Amino acid sequence: MSQQALAEAAGVTFQQIQKYERGANRVSASILSRIAKALQTPVSEMFGEAGLRSGPLADVTGLLAEPGAIDLLKAYMELPKGLPRGALVEFVKSLKGHYS
Image (tube, rainbow, N blue to C red):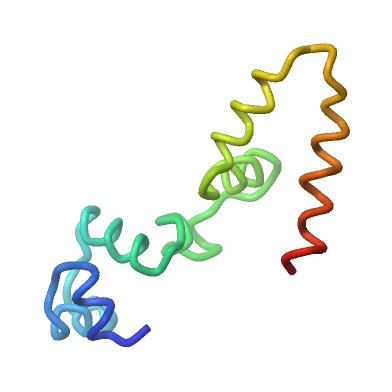
């Protein structure tokens, strides 16, 4: 994505994006959120590995940050208890092979 396209998506000027990139200006939380949305990535991704904790909690947090993850988990939990949930998990896993 070009800096111009990113600037338009974030609602700032091209020059402002350049200043953010060079570190000349700080990025507000609202602008950072708009930039992440334009890049279709979670805000946490903007902090890189240094900004993330490691371990199982960070893994779960990262997974839940994916678009649709919470909705999928809620739908799974609303399934009747007698339904073979493992079959649903295997079905979702099988989709990976069709779209990768």
